[in-house]
Amino acid sequence: MSAVGRVDLIGGGPGPLDLLTLRAWRLLTTADVVVMDRLGPTDIRAHIRPDAELIDVGKHPGHHPVPQHEINDLLVSRAREGKHVVRLKGGDPFVFGRGGEEVAACLAAGIAVDVVPGISSAIAVPQAAGIPVTHRGVAGAVHIVNGPAGVGPATIAALHDDSITTVILMGVAALPRIVADALQAGVPSDRPVAIVERGHHHDQRTTRSTLGAVVIDAGVAGIRNPAVIVIGEVARAGLLLSLPQLTGDAVR
Ligand code: SAH
Image (cartoon, rainbow, N blue to C red; front, top):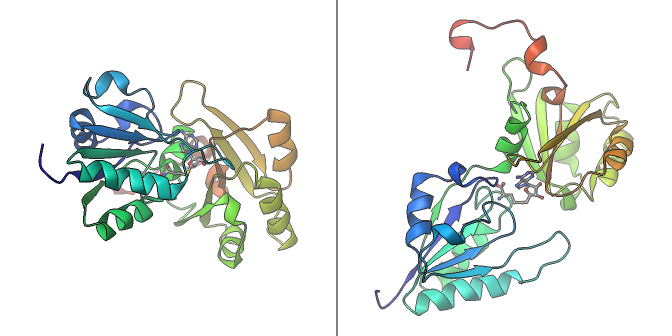
C-alpha cells in the first residue's frame, strides 16, 4: 500500500452489476475501501475483497443519513491512510450525483482522484421501458432536470417544445407542483408522460399518462422512488410500434 492513497469515483449504473463498466469493476474488486450509495449496485459484498472495508452512506429522499461534507471527509481521510478508496455512485457520478463536490474535496486536500463514467438512469431507465429519449423524427433534444429544484423557465420552454424530451430525476414528491406549474404556463395537457420505477430491476414498472392526468394516475398507482419521469412525445405508449419502418442508415 502506498503512503498516500487515492480515490476513484465510479459510476455504478442503475442497479445490475453487469451494467458496470469493466474499468469500474476492476477498481471495485481491488479497492481497500468501498463507499457505496443506496441507488446503483448494492449487492456487492461478495464481489469486493474480503478484507475491504464497506461503508454505506446511502441517502433517502429528504433524509440524508450521512451529510455530504462527512462523505467528503471520509474519502479524504481514508485516502490519507494510504488506502485505495472507491466511491461507488448510482448511475453516472456527474449526473445529479454530487460527484463534482467529491472530486473538488479530494483535489482541495491534495488527494489523487479520478472518475469512471457510469450508465445514467436519465437515459437508461427510460430505455428499460422502451423509451428512446431521442427518437429520430420525434425528439431531437433531451432536457434533464432535478425534480426538487422545480420548474424554471428552461424547463417550461422544454415542456412547451414537442421535439424536446424532458427527463426528471428525484421527481416523485415534486410531481404535483411540476405539473401545476407546467399547466399554468400553458403546456398542453395531452403531453405524454411515462413514469418508470425501479428501472432495470426485476420489479420495474411503467405508468403511462398525460400531463393533465398524471398526478391522479401516479396517486392511484402508488408511484414511489426511485423513479424517472419522462415527459414528451417519446413517452407515448406504443411509440416504437406505431412509427413507419425506417430503413438503411436512418435506423440508429
Ligand atoms: N447519478 C444518478 C442520479 C442520482 S439522482 C444517475 O446518473 O442515474 C437519483 C435519482 O435517479 C432517483 O431519484 C431517480 O430519479 C433516479 N434513479 C436512479 N436509479 C434508478 C432506477 N434504477 N430506477 C428509476 N430511477 C432511478
